[in-house]
Image 1: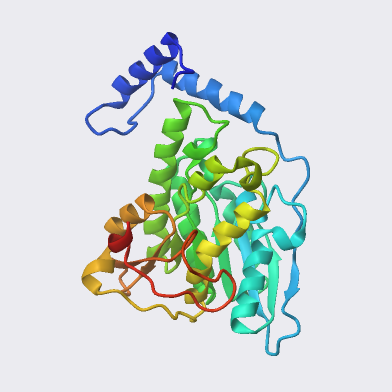
Image 2 (image 1 turned 120 degrees about the vertical axis):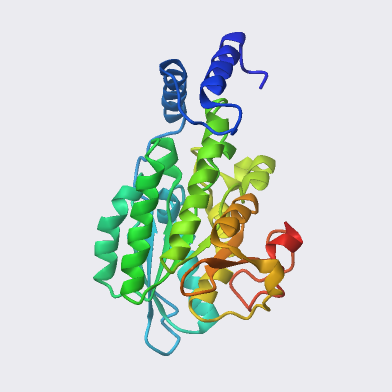
Length: 336
């Protein structure tokens, strides 16, 4: 905050007055505030290098030594799903998930990575078209960050995601979505854009959660899941562009999503917390999940009015990333 000069503060205050202090949300922007944000977005794009080469694909069969018909896994979304920033196929999220599923189920997994670096939610229909050609058993989607940086219309972005989940579920494909990450944790994005990016990220993540669960999928809130670790050890957790995760960063994020992925496949060994603690209306569950990164939201009724929240042990707690089933699970209200 010390980096802001007096002029910046005047612009922030003016933008805040236009936005409306009553709700604390951005209701609109003036030409002046929009101009400031656009300049800051351009500055961030100059600081964050453009994708120079596509990430390694990692497509293929994992756990070929195991018996049985391969489980077909498709990975859709943006650069976070593609694994931009790593250099070996085995370090990509798709390979991490395929390896974990194969080892847990002792079955082969056939991976198709269809995620596209730079994709926004409006690009999902074409990815789903390609995915359905493989008759997938499971789809993992990571999307939303680029919708925030491109200031995409939130309602349209959520609609595209909901349509993607609906089409996949109609094809009898299980779906797990990692919701929009908290872009306010990215260092090259400076205030006031950082503050708005955080708010927009959380609003989009909550809306994604509601839409995905209504469409029959499960979500895991990403938020600032890796934020504290990234701040404490940026050299290890970030790739060279200071924006995308390193191999270790992707591995930790995949580890947090693995219990939900296994639950979607019917391998759920977690005890269920009392209903009064872990079952909320869907909008309430979405709001809770945004505030507690790493939280799973899944439907409990066919009408999807109610949703169940689960929080899994993660960094610093006893768990196995890709080995035996994780231990006891607490409701989000009990740990958050």
